[in-house]
Length: 364
Image 1 (cartoon, rainbow, N blue to C red):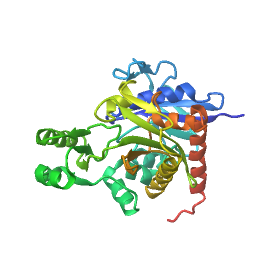
Image 2: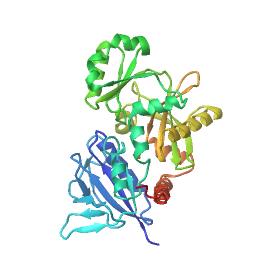
Image 3: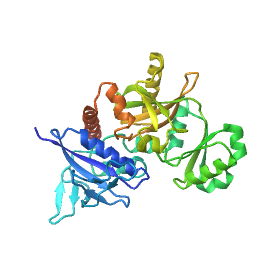
Image 4: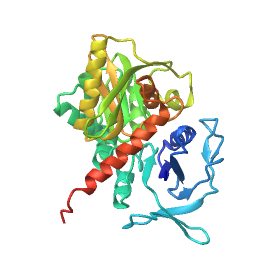
């Protein structure tokens, strides 16, 4: 049987570049290469695309803090308006490659925020994960929270500020409304990058300044006391929810290091030690959130669970981590879908959506 050509797209210009390298490594280790012909496409921190060799495409691959992409690949780009030979390899001679589907394991800006999804749609290539709108909404925490709130889904109270409003960020008025401690976040980043927990004015001022170095818009949120709960979602028109997992951070909160750098940074409890009724409620909220935020294919929905057993949505991740310690594949494994089969499902969902959208008549 003819293999499906799968382009694994990784790296990228975002602050989550190293996380993406780890995700790509994990996907490469488990994808069924009897079924798929792998086209490994790495993007460096300057945005240059390379066709990479599958053997040894990473440096320091066993050290999450020093992992790097090898810059020995062939420079490549996409062509447009073709149904075949979409990838151009600038070698001697020039080589064209056909891609059946792209599996983006890009995290953060220029990968998870709808920009890459728009490029792939213009290139007429099916891709794994939410499309342009769902990706853009999922990345922008403020827009996502407003839509969730309007749909009656519980969220933490928050304020939002643009960079040009930094001099209007008043600690005393915010504390009066939201209390202490406060969480300060860039609006358009993931993996807890740039997030700070502020317990006093000095920490707050530093956190606001730091968050604005990562984005032109920030969120200031109330602190929700409770355990951190995560649920994975899979599917297009009829998404399903995984088992529910709990995160018990060893640090003050589930930070970037705890997620990706330190295997002992948090204790993972899968399934979470909560009642069946509460699991069902969280699963229903996770699926509803994906529908409200226009997310198809995959997403991981993160909650806070209060002492009163109230589930409050923290955020949604449209390209969740695929590293060896990432929750998304772990949650599906305990739910009966092992990692390699999960990749199969995600690729099939990408192709199904592409076929469905091909059936829509050109409106122009």
